[in-house]
Image 1 (cartoon, rainbow, N blue to C red):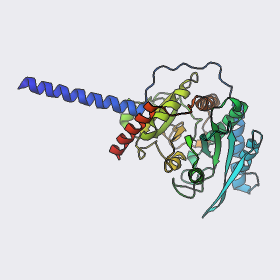
Image 2: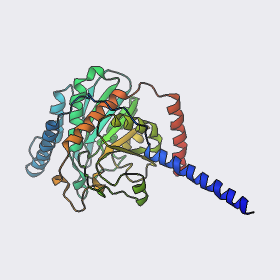
Image 3: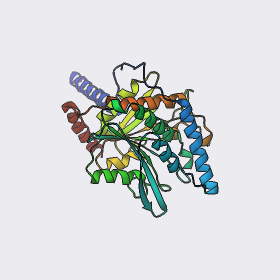
Image 4: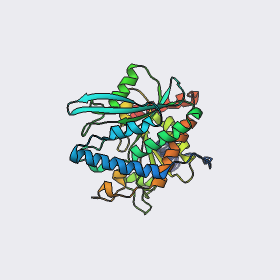
Length: 344
């Protein structure tokens, strides 16, 4: 009898260990060592800093004195130096807004979308806005335009307007209008990358917080990494992007795949692409879980060296993207979709 109990207990312990191992694999997406690329295109740190300074000044001036120069004008004018930008106007209850778009690379049917919100949200979320994401998108546009002949797929850079405290899946979000327009035209989107704040990093121990205590066992407690997060269904594409990011020397990368209602996974423009059945993920410095409590985000120092590494990683992601999804990838996507349905 005792031997049977011990055998059953051993079976249960093994089963629990296997389940925990699978959950760890699907949640954190561990990778084997990746060959770094030493000679990557150089991202201009001074450009990044200038963009941040200019965007902050423009927002402050337009709010205080109603000057004609607005963030969308600034982005459009910069895009005009790289190609032929377009405006996507839309109207909400609170006013008239513009998305700003720039196409780069070959005219393939599929495309990659890299998007970011360019307007700061209204109170109480204003302190979560940081123009580092916009600066990285603009510098990535410059780098991609200089290597447009080498890109394997069309890239659409998008600056999204959002009205006030906009909710995902509503007419107040510029990304909602964009994703809806793509779906209506049956445009195949291979990947959408939503940029949030990406410029704040800390090297002190215990500088990174998480919404749940168990996550401290899975992720670093030092806030010096860039975060990739997405839903379970996009496990394979997130893993692929993580591999590209890891090819940038000295760039620390962590990833999280979880159900859509899990904290850190949703909350940005990528959700509107999920609503239209497009694969999408967000890139973030986890600012709200990293900044000191009661701090003024606009006064926090930005790390332009690491922002430049994120620009290089975006460029490498576009270059690495494959033209076709493999059978193994499709099988894994179906398997993970079933796992996601279980959590729902």
